[in-house]
Length: 234
Image (tube, rainbow, N blue to C red; front, side, top):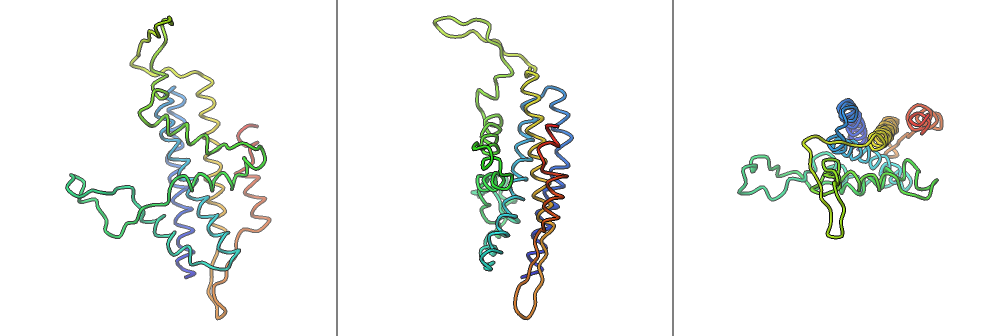
């Protein structure tokens, strides 16, 4: 089982790093251009990938505490080959169907794992990534919150509002700055979780599966170079 666990941990870690790295530039560029809606959709993808890495770290830690790794026999296929594409029969996308693919882990589990890894709710008493994900989903879906930056209220009367829509989005500077800061926190968390995954190493011996996870020195390096909030807020 050691080769499979080593491969899985690195596959998730490097996949997360590559995805976040590829999305960082377009997110920042869209924010600089005032395109809050598009940036929010991309930020949600970053957050989900960071959450998947945190979920993998948490599952490894939980299994190491009990010494039982059977749980990962069902988790690993869901994180590698899971698909949200279901009921494709009789559609034009039927050829994309994969018989071996399984339903993926729910994204909510990823976000919860990321919240626990970052420890924000534990220290402040308030959720950060959970609330952020809800906001980003609202921005990505067909909701009026997402449309708010496209219209202006011209008049308010007892009968309602008169609004005017524009072709171009106009987001406030506060919204842009908030989005940029929260994006950086998602990126931090994703890189930190990936770094934690890369410290795990599994071997097999006559006595069974053996493993090594991140040390105190690893934890300090990850905090100082990746996870410390001061790296973003100054």
